[in-house]
View 1: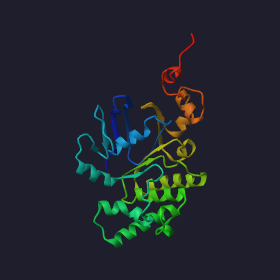
View 2 (view 1 turned 30 degrees about the vertical axis):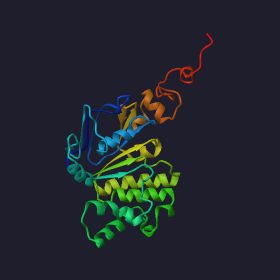
View 3 (view 1 turned 60 degrees about the vertical axis):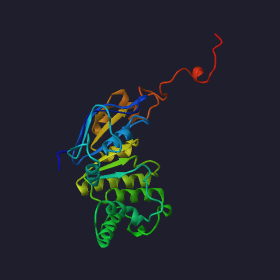
View 4 (view 1 turned 180 degrees about the horizontal axis):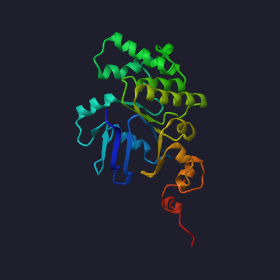
Length: 270
């Protein structure tokens, strides 16, 4: 196990020439930590997560080193092998609706390993026990509440005992009880698996209870970073506005745009 689960150096990324999404991102996440990427909608958090898991690749400058493996020029087969060590919880769970709870959790095991049915059964039951849903193994996602679906997705994300777990908005749409349960499970599973967890989230209160470190992003850049205590006590305007959920501050509501009369095809009377 490398000392650092993730190293990013001077990463920039754009989906096309019209708008830069990430701009010169550099960070290091030591093994064993629970880290949050936070920021407003459109700040680049999910795009950064997609670069980390190799779903997209920058064609410009910068390097992502995942679990000691540089992703630049990595082959398709090597990336497939590396993903065995990375678990992903997609936004809103991303469960297969036509598969049972059991088969959803079993899916990555069947995809990546040649295991006997009895071994798969035992591993799946252990993972479902860990999220409190062993009794729901034969149900389908449509038969579960939103919070329970998220816990199934969490069991699937850790089915292969990954070294790195990526969470894309794991608290979105959850009621306060389900949110607290999910946050506790993320912290508990990270410790049990001796893994590293990266959480993309807007939720300040619950995230600050479980994470070791926070990166605050805005317009594709890291504008602040520190421990939850450091962020809560920070006097930086960016941090204060986000932590306090204030409408006033350097993070604007409106994206840059020409005057409204221009876009509406109106003409000034002057």
